[in-house]
View: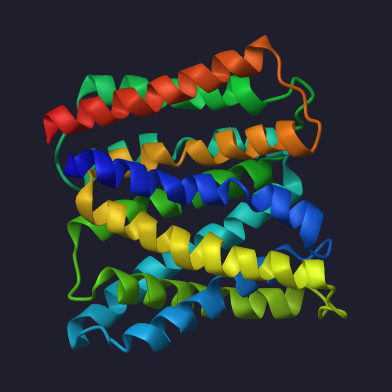
Length: 284
């Protein structure tokens, strides 16, 4: 029962992240992706640090900084590079390889071969996302593809290390330090790559508040709490819910099409998540 509760609460994080596209397109100023990422994570980190007032131990600073770079700073930067250079569907497909990469790190770093079923279901998840969101007209950009894969690899490594190299920090402080460090990584990028924000409307402010309080504070606390309680591949597989949620919200509110291919992809993604959970759960 505890595991089921952990799966449910952890799944809320990618579902919240799936609303990012809708909020960004409908509420935020255009052409400010790095600024949006910065406002999303840096204030969230400061809020959590002000609340917890916990410092890492002397020997933990380097590891916490590495996780902040992998899970937040580098991942967010690569995410937006891919978003600029690739269609959303292709970017989502490449990002969905994260579960496969977690299995690779489990094998290479952890010296443990994951079950064959986990590999198969993880690959099925990539196929499901492709059916759900990929368009035949998708254009291929080498730099964008490399950025999407690099971002997925960074998050996969961050998820694996977060599980297998624990710190003394409670989950709120652990999350806060990663968001803060990741935000510091994004700060110079946002300042150098984008012009300053102009006067913000009430809708803009609401959008940024949502991304900060729900998309960062709440979602990342749930995500890192799930990493502490579940196998890394099980957590990573739940990330497939993010593009699924984005697709459903686009269908409901933005008039995007849903056809038989999309429904098949939707079903395959859900089967993939269930299959990975069962495979790695039995192995654990």
